[in-house]
Image (tube, rainbow, N blue to C red; front, side):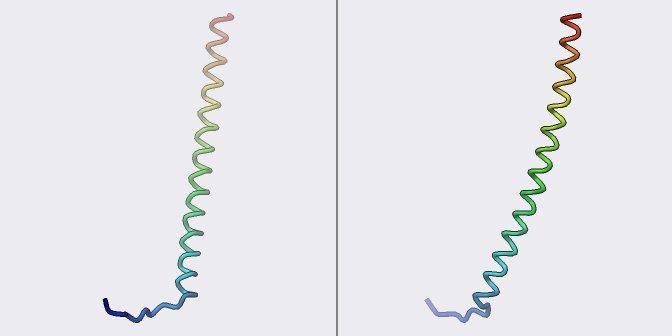
Length: 59
């Protein structure tokens, strides 16, 4: 194995890692918001259908 010179400083590598982590964090936040919104919509739809069913059964 031969030793190769690495042209990157530790600081620049760590900055790239930090930036990548922040990017993933933003994507996860967006995904979480989307999932929360979809769950809220499903809950509203379920509640409406349950209420309609209850009215049909009870009268």
